[in-house]
Length: 364
Image (cartoon, rainbow, N blue to C red; front, side, top):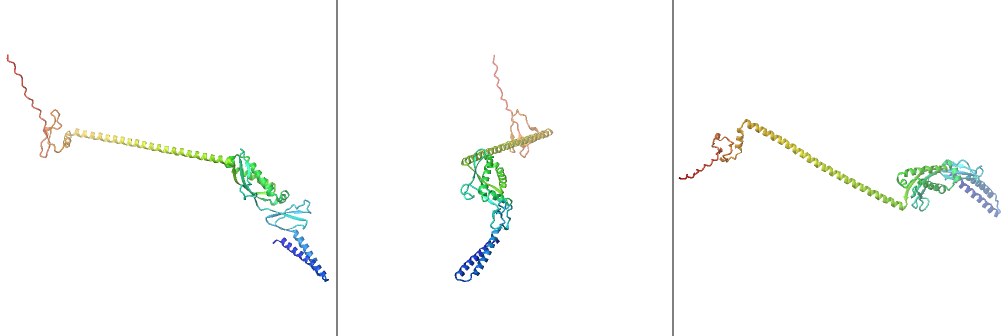
């Protein structure tokens, strides 16, 4: 309970005392008794009621979140040029009154969804872009009255701040800002820039009218059904193009992988061929060197060839026939039969020629 309310309560009690004195006077007068006590009570109650009523009329308590504009019948301009600050303040009773304005932050929302904004129903802002597309915008404005400009606000707007200042100002600024951008810019690239343009313009306009912009929120942007359908089709086409591009890239990667696999196989064949060729060269070189060594050994010891030849013969061979017109590999006269199963080579005897019979000479 504030002091002003307490004084008003006391003033009410004083007025009750006054009326009680009047009743007492009438009662005692009707009974022919002395009315002096009633008169005294009524006068004291009246005096006290007038004083307390006047005092309560002159006391004003300003909340910390408020500022008071004094409407004065004695001031040259009809109002005090300084607003009342928070606390218990005094004004001239019955000649001055106070209009209080809150300086705390207030919210004004315009939304397509019913119940979100101050206006019931669809209260979104319809605007057209630079390329003629229609968009619907939901926005919120958080503002407050400038404590230093309360008197200006009272003179210009009084209780019409939200409906006749904030609402039309915001809607007009949003429409003007949207008209400077194309639909694609509003949707993506320039949305932040557009929002900042709206915020700066709105802040300046509100400041000119004694208000302070705390925050501007671009809540949502929706489009006409036709444009929304075209955007959806465009997105589907882009997704299909991306999918096709992905398939092409996959095929390229598969082809590259196959090429690298084939290249690896070809390289492996080449390497294997080179290895085989080199191995063959090494083997041929080794064989040539071995033959050269054999030739040198034979040249140094001619009987070595005969020895090797004999070792290659089957161990069970006792007799070997060779044609008489073939030169002997072994010097047969030097071979001696041995008891250990040495091989005896006998040449095939030449066939004995048959005697020829000459015809008898004719007898003369």
